[in-house]
Length: 168
Image (cartoon, rainbow, N blue to C red):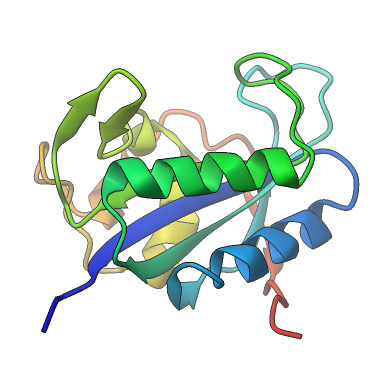
């Protein structure tokens, strides 16, 4: 029997009905991945510390038969279907979906780096990820998730908002 891969997805939104956008994305991802866990929703300032509205973020742990490349294609297609427009790096977005980790694989491709190259610097990834994958160890640095959280230089004022209600 084929063993499904375990992936961590990071989702974010700072336009429109942010909580609803996250819930809609989780619901849609559940159509092509087995949802293992979904974190609470967290709010942070934008990475640019500019006048953008705050971001709502969560992480989800999923099992999938997809390869990393096929999972990337699926989540980027979902972003487009949900109405994401390319407004530039770190700018406003209806939905953003990143693959943070995929079976603790180390992979470098033009369109995908695994684990996510900036994960250890992002509170909006590490805090929700610690909820759903508390024993995670980074495959390159060998740091556990809790040590990575301690080493964050700017937590962007992260605040836990509550659970994501995505099941209908």
